Image (cartoon, rainbow, N blue to C red; front, top):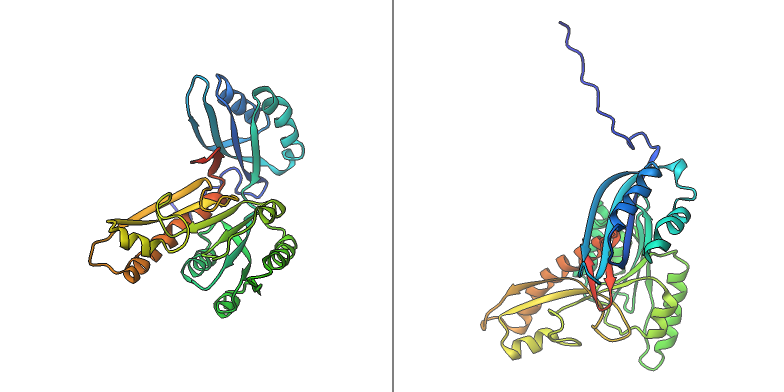
Length: 299
């Protein structure tokens, strides 16, 4: 018997003829939603790779669904339109569809603290972020060198205390020209106005250096030390006009003691901030987060 080299196993979609798609669904819960979505995908020639669902209450609650599937490129032309007519209208579904082969384009806003920014750049370079960092903008010039060393454009947009609208207008000009899918605040120490958020028109994720709702606003580590807490944490949330009140995506904590100074709390907290922030950004990039009022469903 002559030994022959093993042939690679080629699965459907490996030949470049298929795209991986993600479908997110939110609607009033009622029987038949999963069956209708699955049947539509089957009839469309799709192959379901992953399916996650959650109901807040099976009798009168809200229903959430995330499906990941492959679909031939030549079957995508009117897929969204057909799904809207055949399924979404029938079940009063709010939904979105995303091509997983197209990374989301991200803009990072940052001030002087570099730990969250550098962590995002590192994960992006490794291919772990799930998105593409298109630009970094800052109200300070301090972090230009590491950002440009990573091959990312850096924009210095100063914020004058007596003319903040001018800075926001300049930011909107930069961000609007970049064809973005999301903006993340990697310790950007400026409050964004409701007008700015409305005109921006894409989701914004912030990292706050406390376990919200505790110690919202400025100086949370100093206030945590004064209060004598035994746990400190970080919170990643979507930004709304109300400061630190947006829907929470991810949180984590670390134990501390009376021996830890405010400076030590800040140092320990930076590690938690990095991890929590990167998880939230990655989960959003992978379409795992659905907003439901003031909270989120994360698959």
